[in-house]
Image (cartoon, rainbow, N blue to C red; front, side):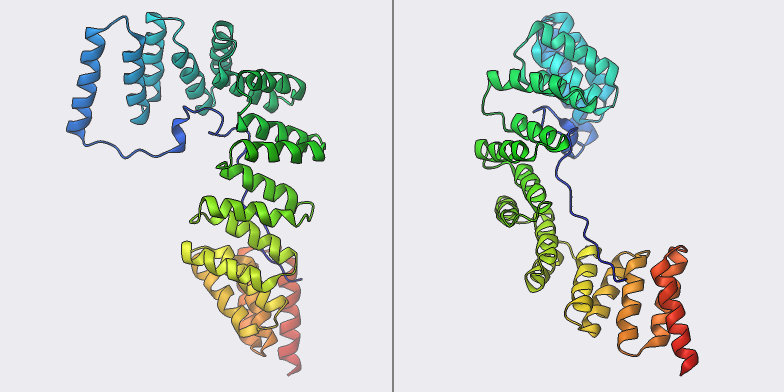
Length: 343
C-alpha cells in the first residue's frame, strides 16, 4: 500500500483569537531593552499617581504588563481599574480574555457574567460567552448569544463564522455553507473564513473549494496554508501536475516543508511512475524530517521499482525501526528479501 500525506492545514478553531479584538497571545512582541522598559513603566506609574481615579491609566499599565508576559500583573491592574470605575467595560473584557487564554474558565465565566450584567450589548463578552456555550455543546444557547451580538452589529463576520461551525457540527450543511459565505461577504479580508470554506467544500468534493483557497492565497501570498490545502484538493481531484506546481511554490516559501516534498514523491511514484524523481523527493522529505517512516517506506518502493533491492531493504528496515507495527513496510521487506534469495 502506497501512502501519502493528505492532512490539510486546519482553519481556526472555536477557541480562536479572532473572537476578541483584545487577544494578545496572537502576536509576539519583541521585549524592550531593560532601561526602556523600566522608563516606560515609570511613566505609567507616574500617570497613575497623578490620576488615581482614572481607570484608563490602570488599563494602560495592564496592557504594558500583558505585552511583557506578566498576565498576573495585568489582571491585578484591570482589577484596580474596576475599583476606580466598576463600569469600565475594557477591564471586564480583558480580564475575561486573559482568564480564557490562561484556561482558567471559572473566573473567566464570572467576569463574562459581570460584564454582560453591566453591558448587555458588549460584543466581545457576548462572543466569548457564545464560545463557552459551544464548548459545552449548548448550541441553542450559543445561537442566542451570537444573535444578540449580531443585533448590535450585523457586520460581525466572526459571528457568522461561528454559526457556520455549529451548523457543520450538527450536520446542517447547507446552513453551514451559507453562514461561512456570509462571513466572507461581510468581511472580504477574512483569510481564515476563506480557508474554512475551502476545507468545507473540499470535504464534499465541490470544485468551488479551489476558488476559496485561491481567494485566501490572494489575501496572503506568502501563506503556506491555502497553497497546501489547494494542492491536496487538486491531488485528490487527480490534477497531479497542478498539485506539483503548488508543492514547488510551498518549498519556495518554506524550503524545509517535509510534507510538500513527500507528496511530490508520492505523485511521481504513484501516478507518473517516475521512480528516480520519487526517490529524490522522498529523500528531501527525510532530510527535513528524519523520523518520517512513510518517506522511508515509499523511497524503498521507488528504489525497488528501479531494481535497487538492497537499498530498498535498508529503507524498509528503517521504516520498521521507526514504526515497528508498520505492516506495509513489513510486507515490503519480506517481499524484497524473497526477491534477493531468489536471485
